[in-house]
Length: 113
Length: 111
Image (cartoon, rainbow over all chains, first blue to last red):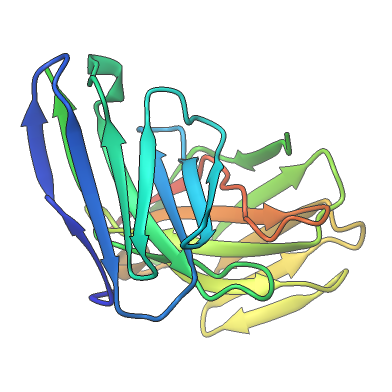
């Protein structure tokens, strides 16, 4: 869905570096999510936000932080990247008001050397 | 947290054969969603099931929600190469609206 964009699409970095992944949406959705995908492990929820002033930890938030700069923008930061954070990262949005049908961005492939 | 098991992890089929993936939960579910992720792509919403025993169809895809709302299945009739991808179930339970994704079943269709 072009309505949800992620930058960068690919990133290679070194251990200890600070990395920010950005997500923008034009769907007008209040809810935004960050997921991590590792082969064979499905999608694991890192953080989610129901509106600009609401930030919640997901199941694997350690080592990550987020910022909801506006309704349309939700960024994920790795303060000090480590190799086991090498993964595919997806941002998703949902309208809210019921069970969340999620709309995913194209993903960011992050490699930490 | 909610435990969701999806089986099988992988399935190889010849084009034209049927395919089924199962999603089993240890707890009663409020609803369940299914997503498809093509190789190199992102998950895309397919359908949501809410009612006990519900059955929904999308062309060759049939989705079922168990009577006890603890399991669900996705069945594809006469697979095609365009069906290749990973299928995820994503249920919600309790008062949460956030789906929990299973590990997925990867479907490989051989022409």
